[in-house]
Amino acid sequence: MYKLSVKHDPYLNIHVDSYILRTDTHCVFIDSGLYGQHELVAEAMQGRETTLLCTHGHWDHIGMHKTIQDMGGRVRANIGDKPYFEDHEWHWKELFGQFMNDCTIPPARRETYVARVGSPMVPEYGLEDGDILDIGEMRFQVIAIPGHSRGSLAFLEIHSGALFTGDGLIGNGFFTGTPQYMNVPDYLASMEKLARVSCETVYSDHDPVMPGSGLAEKALAGRDCCLRIDRVVRDHVKHHEKDEDLSLNEMIEAVHAEEGRGVGAGMCVTVLAHLENIEDPPKCVVKCLNRYIHGI
Image (cartoon, rainbow, N blue to C red; front, side, top):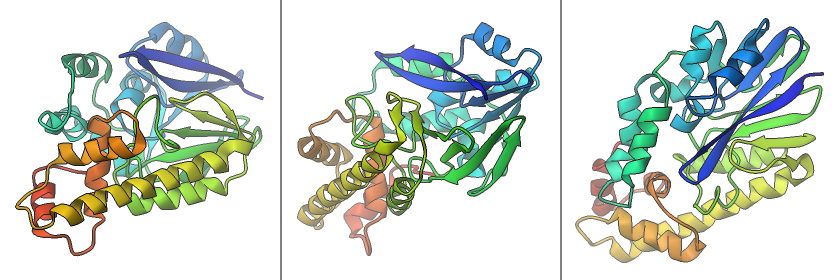
């Protein structure tokens, strides 16, 4: 059996966790968190064949990827998140920079991003849904859960029943914020999929560890939250469909009023996903979408 430890990285009054699974001969990282804690990483890898499994490519989960790769670790990911790993200027713009006029993004967000995203790198792409990875005594099933990002994955360690979900399992949102996802149909399907997974324990990168018995409820809460947000966005569009353009800020404030949770750049990403999901969109929706890069 492996020994499990956590790389806990506080930032901007919140945190991100990544996980380290060690046996005598092998080390598996599930994500690498923010840039830093080099001694912890080096100690975990010492004398062990090391693999890093990427749940997704967002900035706060990839800070030590290049460091681990340079130290001889194998970094594996889904190609759906390719530019997040390789192009950090695009990465910043897609998640934050383009929303400067739509929500408040404090200077500390940019400063922290630059300092702790780590270096661009190229993982081994190719992880796909249903893959089985035998790493020493550990065996992982790859579960594709696109939605939060195109390349989001969960990893189920089969022997122990430990499920690592990254940011793919969000429920009603992490911390005080609303959920962030970039594709509505994919996200809904992934929540339904996760609700059917059997596991012993669930490890998220932003939420406390929870028993597997709570997985279905959390996943379906995420589905229901997504459906509520979809109704808010569609109602807003209906009331403004004769306008020349739409205000992203007004839509995220409408979601805030419905959900009673904080909104920011992540909510901008989510609202764009809902706008993209509108069939035969009016011109105001098309004009709004054309102002932004969204997805890959």
